[in-house]
Length: 408
Ligand SMILES: Nc1ncnc2c1ncn2[C@@H]1O[C@H](COP(=O)(O)OP(=O)(O)O)[C@@H](O)[C@H]1O
Ligand SMILES: C[C@@](O)(CCOP(=O)(O)O)CC(=O)O
Ligand SMILES: [Mg+2]
Image (cartoon, rainbow, N blue to C red; front, side):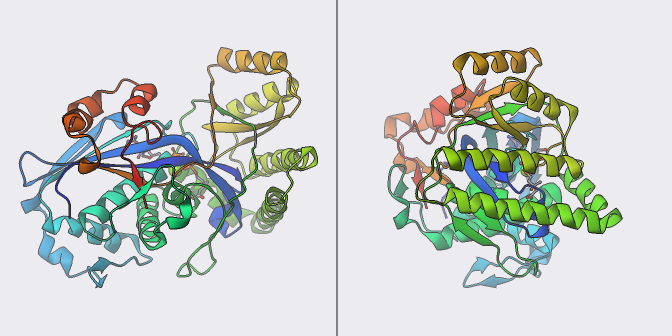
């Protein structure tokens, strides 16, 4: 257990194929984004106080440890070899997770994110993974992260990542009830995956790493229309109940197209024919998501602008209903066509990101891995909560900029 301050960080994701159908045990393909959440954990000045400080969403809350009925809670906690065990039900897990704090002094948990919130890029999962990894560090349930940013992933400690992945799913359950688990899997492990939740909820999901993820040229456009994943997932569930056969056919079609996309993406040679197939599948996937009722006029607008300038294939990504769309760019798209689209996106109030996919998963920045004369500044709560924008956070803490970040 560490009582020195530390940071953890985990990435958002882009779902290329299979959002929503992933909830119904269909395969889906997603990759880590270079936008991330950061969580600072620091001992409280008053050791009896547990404090959450989430300035991005204007939330600050404190508990006095002595007001929490720890002894009663502990009766519900199941542990194996000292590690809290995950079960299917949510409530006991939350209690279990909280009870990990029994043996630690009061802590401050402060979160900042470079991810747009509620935009389909998995900001909720990035937060859930940060919290799960911080609790795992505090509870002594994982080994110290020790793999450098540039090191090859072969030396990864899979057991610890699996533990964090499983517990972060509990966090995603708090956010939207019935998550597939794909977002927290990518936020934990990074890279790119083909993911499939099993029909039996007790069975672990299947995750196939896609090591040779093809170099897809991708544009990410945010409508900035806020929406909640929980409401959209519930909407699809209602459609499934009302039109079960029709909806089952749509979900089956999504399964086939994710499988076809996977076959194309793992080919040793990824040329123009393969990128064209991916664009065609992207178009079909968007159409199926529209049929499930999760698009939005602003997402259709992005699609119309992209299509009219012929820049590539556009689909919504994540839960939809607003949030982001992705465009798989044509290889021969002209600069003029692209600039015209970008101008129109901006004129409509949309924000465009150029991103790279397949980056690092969860990582930690420990006190002792920061140069002694810089520690006070790096772990300053005041500085952390006051960063003005994404660029300031990335400059001061970015896993790719700041030496000392370690991965499992
Ligand atoms: N930076 C943040 N600080 C605090 N909470 C956050 C932050 N980012 C995301 N969240 C939580 O995640 C929720 C959004 O999750 P969700 O609706 O699944 O959208 P998405 O995961 O696509 O961004 C927010 O309402 C909030 O509860
Ligand atoms: C709609 C869904 O497939 C993805 C949701 O992603 P996001 O919260 O919109 O980033 C739900 C899930 O897989 O848990
Ligand atoms: Mg989410």
